[in-house]
Image 1 (tube, rainbow, N blue to C red):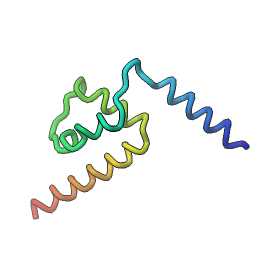
Image 2 (cartoon, rainbow, N blue to C red; image 1 turned 120 degrees about the vertical axis):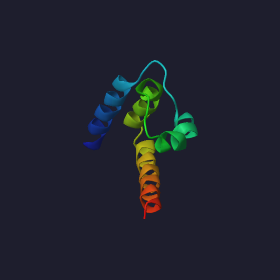
Image 3 (cartoon, rainbow, N blue to C red; image 1 turned 90 degrees about the vertical axis):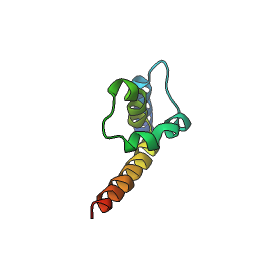
Image 4 (cartoon, helix red, strand yellow; image 1 turned 180 degrees about the horizontal axis):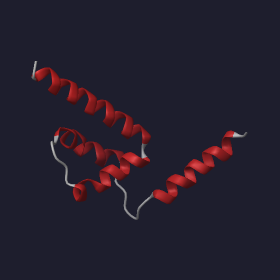
Length: 79
């Protein structure tokens, strides 16, 4: 039962971080591959995507894995 207050605290924290408009996971993944391959990123274009990564641990983990695969692939190209 002690888990419930911790979960409620985490939920309230996430709710406080939400913006008036949010992108969902589907909208995030529509652009994820393109974003992970860019050499430079424009912060204004990315703020909604970065914010989604802060709020969605599932997408954050999957995006990190995608980025690691792409970075590893790029490292192998130079060998």
